[in-house]
Image (tube, rainbow, N blue to C red; front, top):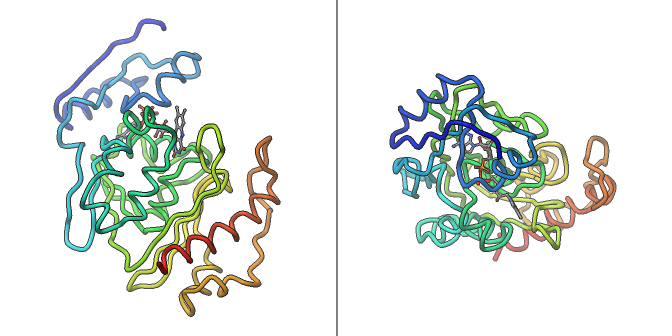
Length: 265
Ligand SMILES: Cc1cc2nc3c(=O)[nH]c(=O)nc-3n(C[C@H](O)[C@H](O)[C@H](O)COP(=O)(O)OP(=O)(O)OC[C@H]3O[C@@H](n4cnc5c(N)ncnc54)[C@H](O)[C@@H]3O)c2cc1C
């Protein structure tokens, strides 16, 4: 490690001030990505602002017809939370399937979506459930949050405070995971709501996206065979040593069907 200034503010305002005051400052959540990145010198922040002392960033609450999860809530906390388990069990299951126990006990919702790894699980939930990301400056709709590979709509000086997940009528997440890391080769969140159906996909492309053709088909008939005949193009999908773009395109269809079957119960 090299020298940097360490801050541990105990309020959101103090964190935002420290972030605004130092152009090369970086936020630290659970450190699951940030610390390895620093060790490899891929990031060399002048200041590290540890969010772990800010109580208002942690926890889960109900807000009308939605469940609000604080940015610093760990994956293990989401997986075990009674509100999440009863209102959006698909979200609890998704959190429970992230990485391993060590990662789930340190990794956070805010760190995951701010990092926007193309293979991360939460982006499928944010997009598939039609969530709203609350920052210290504004609210960002799910459809506008993930803009590219490791890239979000967050601006300099902006930090994720919480995510508001509307409670769906039915939802499920199905992922084809990498056997070592458990990252998603492809993960699909399907949600049926009063306003229609949403299909959020992670792992397949540089950033999470909605599959609107599937959404339309499922809105008319929320059954796996509604997806028969929908061919997912490999154009623009990720291809790497783990899976080709064509294989990922195929997996989108398979995982979407599995998610619909699970959501129907
Ligand atoms: C071995 C391993 C296996 C993993 N497997 C999976 C998996 O199966 N599925 C999966 O989805 N993920 C997986 N992950 C990722 C993990 O779940 C974490 O969510 C991810 O690494 C981010 O870590 P963190 O929350 O500790 O954030 P940090 O590493 O502390 O921060 C990550 C980035 O987000 C920024 N940041 C943090 N908090 C905020 C905030 N509130 N507002 C704005 N920016 C913020 C930081 O500045 C940094 O740039 C894995 C990680 C490891 C190490």
